[in-house]
Image (cartoon, rainbow, N blue to C red; front, side, top):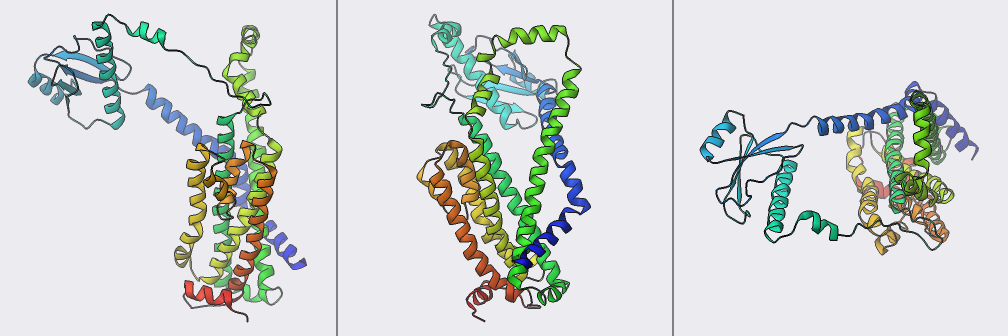
Length: 428
């Protein structure tokens, strides 16, 4: 145990003191913020700077009654001559021609110089369908406004028996975010362990280390040390992100505070109970943060330790990064499968049989159980899943230790599944 702690400390200090780790820890929240901010700005600029598509409509049956309302994306005008409209498309004064073939309007030819995007085609189809619908309502003495007045507008607030908001949207978002972080860190730092082991093996440094400590102690020290590095970086990102948000809120908020803003705020407080902000706050109050944070730490460590032992075993068995690909795929598949289950089955029904069983299977439970945690699952399920997870880790680390013990000192021999199996069952 003393040697494991010694190696753990060495791994943590060595990796945490690297300039790359310090830079990424400090700049990580800013880079992530800039990444999503850039995506938002690009989406916003694309939405606002979108060029109107000029659409010519040839309607010889007068099925639209020369009525087609333009919007922010399309500008419509009617033409009598198809050949002239096609000529305008060639001259780029018109972008698209809609040639309506029958009175009912269910057969339309689209002519364009360039292919329409899928979004533009769907929007055009929807605008045509709405116009035909409105025209047919008018023929029957009805209007869209009168029809809409009959349609009830339902505002649904879902609550639990305790009176608190169920917070389905917030729970789904928090659960999936936590699951994705676990998934990301397992891969990122698991691969780091694998490459570190391979480099030490190729540099023959491990031969000196093995003379002082047992191979199992070396492997466990590395796994625990890197796990602590990953958790440290994650906690640092959370703290720095919170501080960054506070600083930006103060910096941008203080410049715009005046007496008029204060008066407007006072007026808005009267209506805050019906605002989306109140709904968000209600959903936040429905979260059991103690259970979520406790579960996150348990399944972060459990999942990381389980997969890191497998990555360490792979690193010890191969001599180069290119050889790791044949072993990475089967090891990674259960974790990827767990993320898919989290997206499909859990969001549809967090208490379904598939979700419950996948949250108990140790190779998928770190991701699936994290998504289920915000949905008030029992502590009994959490304890059972964590016991199975850490029990499997002990078994896997024992088997991985046998591979590590032999593979770390094996050179020039290409590893295979058959060879790994022999190492696991070997008693020597």
